[in-house]
Length: 443
Image 1: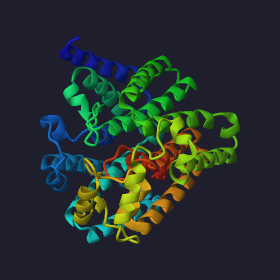
Image 2: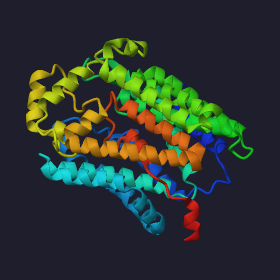
Image 3: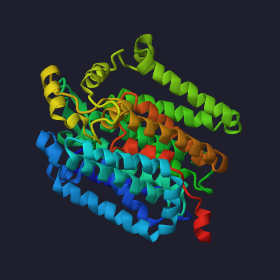
Image 4: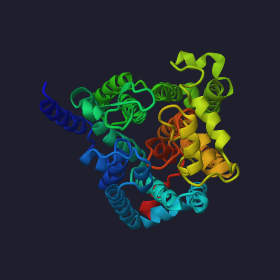
């Protein structure tokens, strides 16, 4: 099949799965397409990269960014803010319920002032605020639980099939070469293989959740359409996992899928204590395997060596260059520092790293122990929110708990607590407290 014919087939396939998954009874706001556009960009490439194939690889480009992309993202944020202004009662309630999350964002803003590049740090902070705006739009939707699933599925319905198309028929866009080893890899719509991995992780889990709902009869009689649509996306996701070779994302996907299934069993669904115990065991096992004792052999069972493909070396190097353990280098600023770049260029063979490959370590380097403590507070508070949701809406609670578990495990070997990262958006969605839609109707 020629690339042009394959593109046509891909378009019809995307339209077909959207048609199969439609739900005329659902009252989701059309404004949900705004955060869907944001997630689709963050899960793939900047618009300038799609339009002109531009790269942000040089130091100057990373610091300055793309003015074109800045306008696009600012426009999406502005559109989102207009919607939130119209929902001001819901937004006021949301902000009042999510003070710990707002405190963390406020501390990130304050840390901009001690960054070596405050203008760059502030730009990145505004993108993180954009992430929060999009989450607020999803959680203040008239049907927030359905909106969460549609938020992910609509993006996945486009990005997953297009990734297959690019890898098979447009290799100049869908494949690349490692800066470290020169080895070829598949990236699909993303810019590198780990990006393709977390796309498969997030959108694959969304399809798993939708399949579970369809099988339980939550689609009000419409079972065949959603089963076919999400089954097809899941099949493509498994193919992409095989092409991406992203061990972290695949491990988290399998963990999240199994946890979602186990959490729905009666022994866990009716006994929250058992569910919390399971979460504790899984988190301890993950921390033990990756941080406490990476040589125990658990990593080899999921295709990783005891150094986590060089990550432990990066952790040691980054910690040796840390100079401000209490407050960090400033929001998203550690790897921009001149002395850090000089040390990396001197000590690192090949392309130096630009992230810690551990989300908690990355927060420590950028925000210090103060930032880590605030992030921990947000997690504990968010877990408490999820516990409350489990009692009021078990379906939404299980989904949020699965997402939080996956985000924590993912960040043990990847740095995803950062702006415009889909896993960070998932984290905010998981921990944020959503107001009761019935209160809005009464207001």
